[in-house]
Image (cartoon, rainbow, N blue to C red; front, side, top):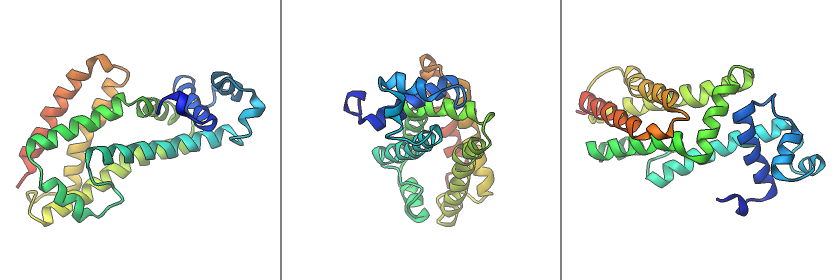
Length: 210
């Protein structure tokens, strides 16, 4: 959605995300946000009670963006059954899995919303205990836990070789997490990053596919 199609409340959250990602939560004032939107401070409070409420809205919207990304690629979401997800991944070939891996990585690195949210999360984890817990949950714990359970199901149905599903999850996720840090803000090097993702996902497929 372009900014012209946004409601005032949506524009407030969007401009706040840009400012938070650049200046941090504490370094951004309500006046900064209102000025960026082109409204008075008092008008902003008609939509949000506080900066914290704006931040909460930004976090909720990040989850929506991730869900929309999964839907657009046809990937089963974490809300569905593990059996359905395992059947989906068992039914696609090496080239398709690599292509999906590259699209997911590109989403986090270049999507207009998620690239800003990634910068905000990395910045605020050091300044805000609540955001630190969110960062850990969103970018590490939830993903690894889901992948561990998914890989365990794929082993059970014979799609993956026998092994420790938690180790598999770390083997898959850790390089992606490292590459997101390495290439964040370096969209000009996207092709290089995607080349590494292609090799990494292909290697993982070859190592564990039954």
